[in-house]
Image (cartoon, rainbow, N blue to C red; front, side, top):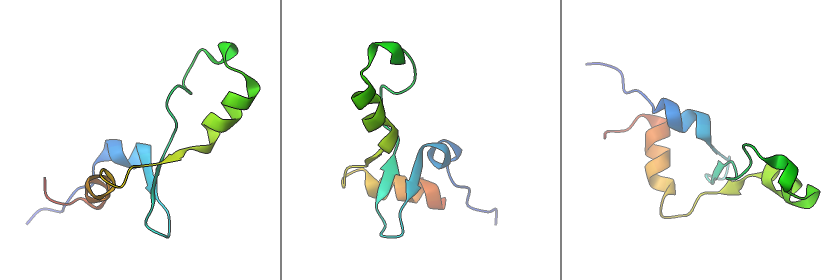
Length: 67
């Protein structure tokens, strides 16, 4: 039986805290940063938590669960 593979795209985008909370990077932080204020850019660096509805699907993708 082959190994269960985790989703490579999910590995690059999400990480799970020790409390089980899934974190992701903020959107709008990729380019055109000259138009954004310093305060906004600092906030974009922090990252955000994923909604509770989406967290189980993301955790399954990271563990290599069935699809």
